[in-house]
Structure formats: structure tokens, C-alpha cells
Image (cartoon, rainbow, N blue to C red; front, side, top):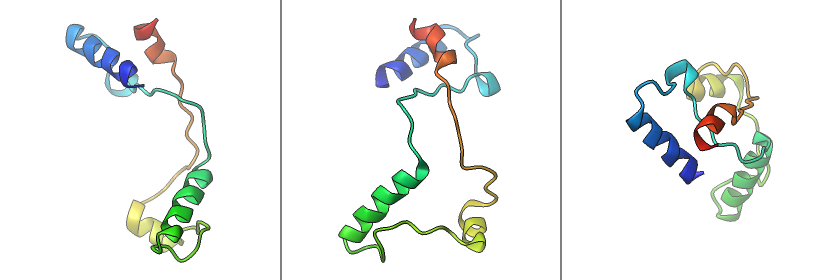
Length: 89
């Protein structure tokens, strides 16, 4: 993935017309995972270190979510490597 971002960086320096802004989100995909699986892993790690109350993740209350994150509209994100392919192909 580091090589991909180096290619994008070099392309941006050499070509002022490289897509950016709304048309220029470059994401290197490397499979997929569920956010729950991530939460489960760090909850277990924190519990093992004596820093968490439970090895299982617990959801935020609506008030906590608003306080820490503002409004959360979605927790499902899907990214595609298609835009970056034109620079690495």
C-alpha cells in the first residue's frame, strides 16, 4: 500500500491535473472487515491489559455518540480501487 501512495504522490507532483477533491479520493483496498470485528479485537486487548470492563464491545448510547462523534449517518463504507488503477497499471 505504501508503494501505491508513493505513486499517487509522485503523480500529483508531476501532473497538476491529477484528480483531487471529490474526484480524487485514493484508497488502497486490502480486503474487508466488519467494524464489530475491529471493536471486538481492541475491546479484548484493553480487557487483557486491565483497562476495559469487558472483553466484548458495547455500543455507545445516543448521547455518547452525539457527544464524541456528532451525528453518525452510516457505519457502512465501501471503497473501490478503480480510480487508483489508472496510475499503477
